[in-house]
Image (cartoon, rainbow, N blue to C red; front, top):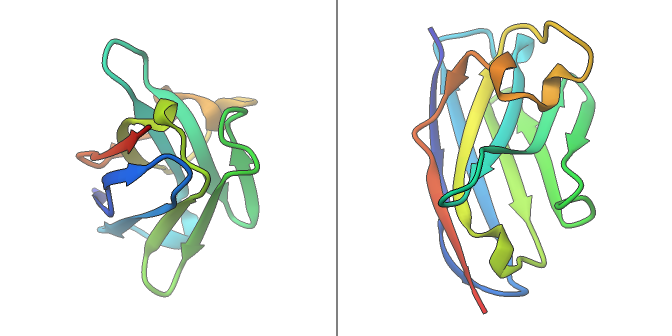
Length: 125
C-alpha cells in the first residue's frame, strides 16, 4: 500500500510560481509511475504531468509552464508551476501507478492505483 501526501498549495497571484511536493511511502518509489492531476469545481479530473523513469509527460494546457521532477532518494515528486493563470486554480492531486496497462494510459486516471488527499491551488487575477 502506497501513501501519498501533497503539500505546497495556497494562494498565488497570476504570473507567479508555486511548487507542489508529494511524499510517498509504503512502496518501491523507483518502480512507480508518478503523476499530478487537478480538478476544478464542476469539472472532471484533468491530467497535468507524469514521470515514468526518465520520461516526462505533460498536459497541453501546462506545457512550457509546469515541470515535474522526482527525487528518488527522498521518495518525493515535485510539480514546479510557473506563469500561473487563474484557470490553473484547482485541487491538485498526486497519484502513483504500479503499472500502466495500455497505450497512453499514463494520461488516464484509471491507471493510477493510489491518490493523495489533494492540495488546493488558487491563482488570483
